[in-house]
Structures are given as structure tokens and as C-alpha cells.
View: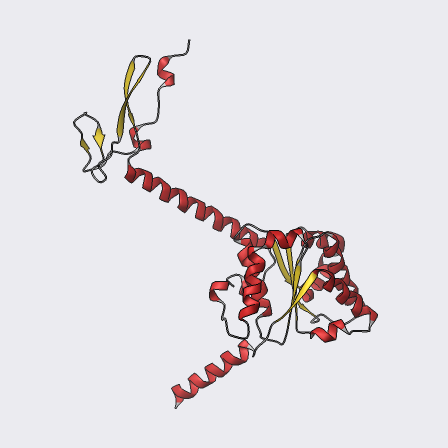
Length: 279
């Protein structure tokens, strides 16, 4: 028969609920917490064996819960940072977030759509539904895409965010296009910035098509940004470009990013501030 002693709790008082200054013995002879007044010890009986064992008072329970939350947060941030390190995202976008977004009347609906995309990403992924953010330079297309990326990575979703220019450079440097595309397609969401900024050579167009086509075939969503106008893509007759755009519109919903350039607005504000300062 097993030793009865081995059946009794073995954690020490220090491990469970340390005795601190101000703690006191109650009428039952057991230690109580000097702050919350709850017991830190219990008297138990097992098969005729009596023993005083430590227990957790409310103060200790709160302390352990706080530590659990702190540990969970640190682990989550460690996971997010690892995801961002693997995301290929440019450093300038790593802190992009919806909480910092400069929402204006002309972009309010677009920001809401982007946030809804994050909230319903599981459904978007199931449907292989992506986005095409298009509009003039400086209207927040890349920043919006980065906000989506960071919000998803905070939920432990794998994201890759790069640009077509960078992709073409990487393919030339690594020399193994198939393996490189496989890395891009391993992410739950692929974000590619600046469609149309790459050199318009037959080689570049072929690589762009291969990237988009292979992504579509994985049944995983992608988000693209471009300075091109929607009619320019929809009405294109050049077969080299048309097959690229047709593939994009099969899975990406076009979202126009409207308004004045953020960069121009900020530059004008800096100019005005300097005029006041120097005047």
C-alpha cells in the first residue's frame, strides 16, 4: 500500500501563499492574511491523518492572476515580434496601427472597411477574399495595409508584407523562384505594395503574373496597393497587363483611397508652422 504521506499536499507555505509581516493567527490557530483577512492555512484530515496545509488568500490569488496576465502578455508580444521579424515588413510600418490612424471624412469608410476585414479575417480567408487598395500617392494605401497586417499578427496570424520591386530583387538574388514563391504563399495573408512601380519589362511582368497567379491557386487571400487608376486596369487592352489585372480582380475587391495626400498636408502644416516661428 502507498505511504499515506505521499497522498498529502506537498507544496510549501512559501510556494503557495508566503507569510508576510502583518499576517496573524486566527482563533483556530491558522495563519490569516493581514491585508484581506482570509486564511493562508487549512487543517485537513485524510484517513485519520491531520495536517495543516497552505492555501491561497485573495491577495495571493490576485497576485498570481496578475502574474499570469503579465506572462501571457509577454508571451503574446514575443510571438508578435517573431511574426513581424518573419513578415518582411519594412521597419517604417512595424508600428502602424488603427489607433494611430489619421481618420478624415474622405477616408473614414475605407478605414472602417479595413478594420472589418481584420475582424472577419477568418471568413475572408475561407472565401479567399482579398483587397486592392488604389488611389493617388500619399492617401494612406500602404499604411492601411500595414495596419491590417499588424492587427492580424497581434492575433497570431502569419502575414508577409513586401513590394513587387523587392520581390523582383529577391528573386534575382536568391536564384530559386519556386522556393521564394513558396515562402510568400506560406503566410495566411500576403500583402504586396506598389503594383505598377516595378519596371515594365516582359521579364518583370512575367514574374508579377507568376506571383499573383500562384497566390490565387493557394486559395489564400492577398492585399495589393497601387497608384494605378481603376479604369486604367479594367479597360487595359495590352494582353501582358490585362492577364495580370484579370487575375487580381478574381479575388481582390477594389477599394479607392480618396482624399488629399497626407504628405502634402503634413508638408503644408510644417511650412505654416515654420512661417509662424520665423515671423
